[in-house]
Image (cartoon, rainbow, N blue to C red; front, side, top):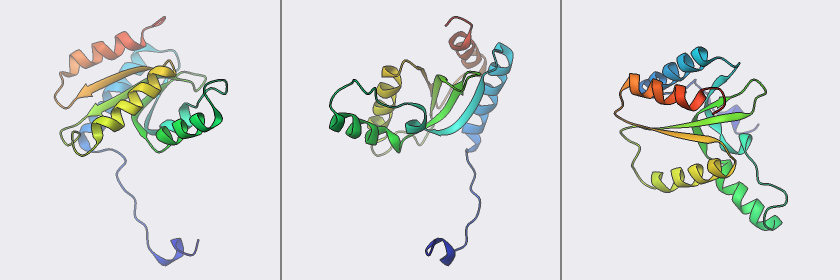
Length: 142
């Protein structure tokens, strides 16, 4: 509290313009496909997946969880029970800088192992094609 009281804070934009465009498309498709699903943005990976207690040693589980806990998914679609069903990563124009490839590889593998579908959207995409891809991922029984 000491440090928080020493400075002023200001709100920040959660999504940039391109990301907001993806959010609007996702929300549209989720509405159209029904099923009570919801779209979440900038979701902490450690909040929606965890290590299985019977998997590896306690140390291995702890280290694996630490590897994902600080990472965020750009978007997450959850079902009416709040369980994740689709992770969506937008690979914007500035995305391929520093160690972004490795961060994404960690997210992709953790999400795969949790049994959650994963979609990557390139910086340049066709909106109609993307909508169809998302509809396919969210159709009942998929």
